[in-house]
Length: 229
Image (tube, rainbow, N blue to C red; front, side):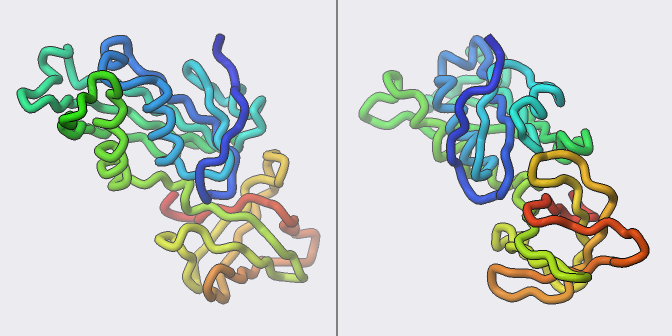
């Protein structure tokens, strides 16, 4: 039955992400559903992954109290006879779609081809996931999910907020424009634009318009870049 499973820790992006990682019928001959799910969880790199069986919807995402959802089905690149190579490798693909469940905006949509590693001399027929574990990570990481660019509000003082920097590769620079898009409970916030004024190490400080009834960010609010996400 489709539905959320218990959350598991998987990485550093400070968000709850609903993740579906279905494996096609023929593809299940070369990778296990558990193995592919582990690969996708590592790729998503969020600190709270909620696995989902089936094709998730916005309603499923919100019911799981997630702010993003990722659907990453695994399929062979054709019939198994065509997808297999003479050296024991296989060609596959995944069509990854990531959606912000608060704004309902698709933030990533890409088909990614994956070529497995060669089987080891120890015999990977009994453990097929070993052919994909490292190979898939090497190829998927070339297309990082924008989820890695999000952060949360840690401190609010008049006119400014303190933020934890996202993954080092996406660290905010002064002048970067951000938006607050959801409260800690996943409910939408009023439009709030932030501008990074200072950044050092693992912390950034951003300013926002205040006064005259303007909305104020709250501790725990979700923040993402205004452009490029």
